[in-house]
Amino acid sequence: MNRISSQMNSADTQYYLRKQEVKQNILNRQIGSQSRIGSLRDDPIAAGHLVRYQSYISRVNQFEKNAQTLSDQFKVREGYVNQNLQIMQRVREIAVSGANGINSRDDLKNMATEVNELLKELVQNANAVGPDGDSLFAGSRSKSIAFDVNMGNVPGATEPLIAEVRYNGNVTKNKVEVDENQYMDVDNSGSKTFWAEPQRLMGQRDLTQWQAKGDNVINVDGIDIKVNAGDNIYAVIAKINDSGAAVKASLDPVSRGLNLETTDAHQIWLQDREGATFQELGFIKDKSQLPPYNLTGNVSVSGGSVFDTVIALRDSMLKGDTEAIGTRVLGSIDQGISNMTTRLAKVGSDYERAQNNVMRSQTTALNVTQLVSREGDIDITHALIDIKTLENINQATLSNAGKMYSSTLLNYLR
Image (tube, rainbow, N blue to C red; front, top):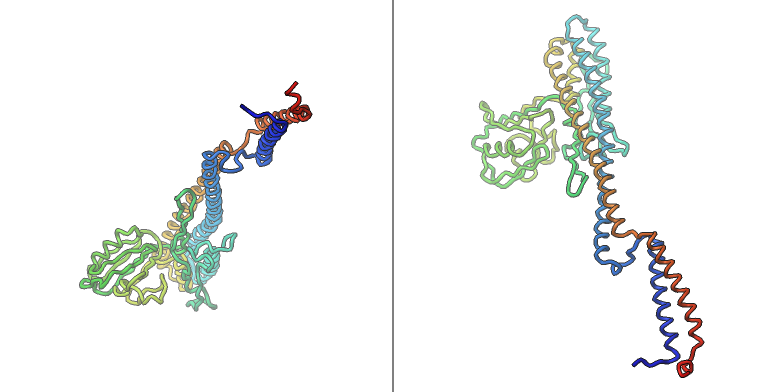
């Protein structure tokens, strides 16, 4: 049995009015924020999905920015490499003209003047910086100049000319995340892009009796290779060949020393990470010397950069050596053009891949946005109908309450 009092109508009316106001406030908040989830208790399962979707879409947007930045860098880098390729084509034309044997010594000197200016342009492009101020061809040393120029006196010249161009960067590859746990390797090493010939290092020390005294780590072209205690030279050769580096190791049949030769045109990068294996093999100086110019004087080096090739052409023209121009120099120029064409194709393919990642991230972001909308967005049409219904109910409740508030207990005793 319920006890009937004069306060019952008022209490019930107040309770249901407050309940309707809560519903109205929730709907007003949802309409204002365009989201049906204001707290986890509104829909715990949908809220869990929504948090994961929003986290993922923020990562996808960052992947898109990373890929777009890479795409811009590849596009700028491609322009400089292509310009240097055109310069090398012009250098080859001059070399062919200078090798025909019909030019006088003065004609060759005049040609050398143009070659020297083209060399300056090659170095300028190789030291180019991108829109962000970073060096384009210095590896991960993006804040330093890629190539240092040494001036010197050249026979036949009346003023100091470029005598040597030395690489000042490194061979470290940058890894940029362009998808979930997927990375693009960014290899902008100038010692690869502007190299002309495969490089060969020939050691002169007899290593047939050599053994590693302890566990060491050597580095070949940026790849760490572990050398175990007791390994002999044949084990080291096998580990270098199996490391994945673009270097082939062998034992010289005459000197019994270690030979290293690149499988493509680039400068070999040798380091002792732990221990002193390469130092014991007679290849590099102590660790205070940085690669690639840390080789000992006992190592015979062959193969140079496109700068070395152009310098050799200029010097041969100044000396009037047409035989050298038509044989060794012209062959090196052709190798340099071939390698630069290969590097240009690589930059172009990297650009295309970066663009594909941009488009994929944009598509993924659009799809995930639809999932976020499905889980969290409010149906505005349905919400407007609901809030209008609640307003009508509230008005009806207030109207009935106004009539009931005049009633007393005596009304029930009639």
